[in-house]
Length: 205
Image (cartoon, rainbow, N blue to C red; front, side, top):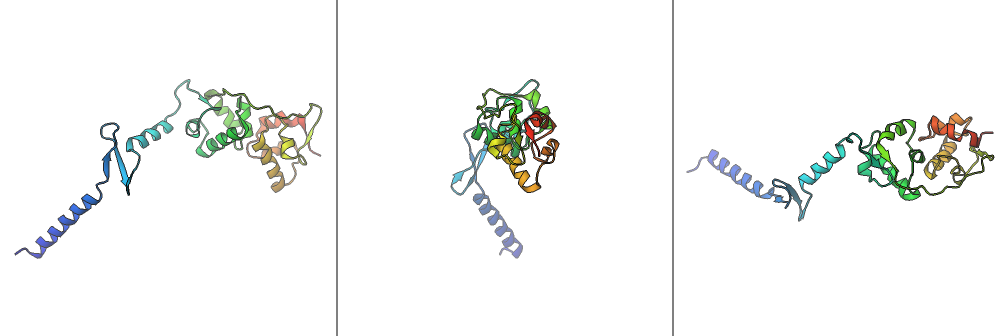
């Protein structure tokens, strides 16, 4: 007659066998030998190999001389660039879809969060294949009052696109009037280089 220990051992082995059947969710994926996928419920998930390949591709640094076309790249491709994280990559793509290609490095200043340091880090690694949409511009002798201008009026300033113009208006609303041209650096995405570009085109009463 089996002892209590024997019965417990039999129960444990039976439980392990059932558990093995329950968790046997690994199915061949039809890809590379050894590739596996996981089934949750009735739907098979992506193969491990595809996830690992994607992760490796996104983590791979740019090769010497390799460039990324910012006017065409996906957010996943943009994050391979220095100083570009997922959030900024998503904003670049969203701005491009809403306002058209950037056309040149300076065009990126219309994206919130892109400042001088970011532009310097990107310069050797990016190209631009698109042509930016024409933007309204004020006559050279007309200065824009940044403490009163609307976002649409601020877009006439060089290097200021819709996103940056809206950010200027929002910062002015939250932080009060700008007291000098340099005070514009309160706005995320505006650095000293852009301030120099717009100084002769603005007035601050």
